Amino acid sequence: MDYESIKQYIGNRQQLFSVRESRLTGGRADGVCVIDVQNGGNLSVTIVPDRCMDIFSVRYKGRCLNYITSNGLAHPAYYEVTGEGWSEAFSGGFLYTCGLSNTGLRSGTEWDAQKEHGCIANRPAERVNIVETETPDGPAVEITGTMKEGMLAGTNLSLTRSIRLSYQRDVVEVTDTVKNEGFRRVPHTILYHCNMGYPLLQPDSKFSVPHSAVRPRTPFAEEMLPHLDEILPPQDALEEMCYYYSIVPDESGWCAAVLENARENLRLRLRFDASTLDQFVQWKNFVKGEYIMGLEPANAPIDGREDALARGELPCLEGGETRTYRLIFELD
Image 1 (tube, helix red, strand yellow):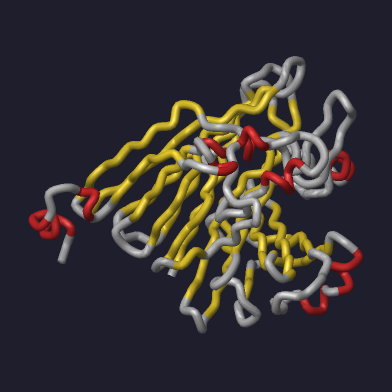
Image 2: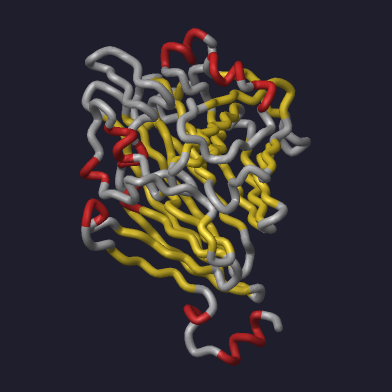
C-alpha cells in the first residue's frame, strides 16, 4: 500500500514516522537532550544535540548495530580536557565526531595544546532545528544544528550539521559544513569515528573498502598485517590495531566501506565523499567487553598535528573559508 493510501488509516503522522525530543534523567546523562527518530521502516536513530549532534545509536530491525562503551552517554559537562578526559567521555556510538583542530594523539605546546581527538564531540549544538516535510512517497525529517570551537587568540571554527532520514528508507544522510569564522589561516582536521559492534561485528563478519595500499599505524599492527582480513573473537588481552587505507574512489569521487554479517543478515555500507575525506582509518579492538571496529573516514592521519605536518597532510582553512563533508549510511 502506498503512503497516500495509508494516510486514510491514521490520524497523526507520528503513528508512521515519529520524531521526538526529550531530556534524559539520572546519572551522568542527566539533562542530556536527545532526538529519537523512528522512520516507519527498520530504523530507530538517536541523535544527541548536546554532544555535537552525534548519532549515539542506530537500531536496525530492533538491534543496535554500534558499540556503546561502559561510560554510556554522559553530559558534556563531565568532559575534562586534561589526562584521560577523552577516554572517560567517549561513549562509542554510531557516529562520534573528532576534531576540529586535532584528530588522534594530543599534541602542541602548553598554550596551544591539542586535546586527544579534539573537543568538538563535547560541544553542544546551537540553533537546533527540526524540519519535517511530506511528499507523495512519505514524510522526511532534516535535523540541523551548529557547534563552535574556539579560544581567545586562537581558532574560531564552526560546524553546521544536517542529518536527514526518510520514511521507510534505511538510509541516514549526514552533511557537515566547517567554517573558519576567524581571519587567520588555521589547521583543521576531522575524523568520523563510526564504532560498530555486536551483532554486526562478529568473527564471521566481513569488511571491505576499495584501496591500493594499507599502512599499519603501530609495530603490532604491522605484525598482524598478514591477518588484516580476519576478525578475531573477543580476547582476554590484545593491543588495538589501526590501519591507514589508501582509498580508491569510484568515478563519482565517493568511496564505500562495507561491514556485513551474512549469517545475521546485516550489512552496513558507509559511503563518503572522498574529495574532502581522502583518508580512511580502520580501528580494530577485539577485547572482551570492548569489541569494536571503527570505520573512520578522515581528512588527516591520527598521530597528531606534528606528524600530519611532517607528512604534508595537515589541512588548513583560510579565514572565512568553508569545507563540506558528506556521509551516507545505508543499511540492509
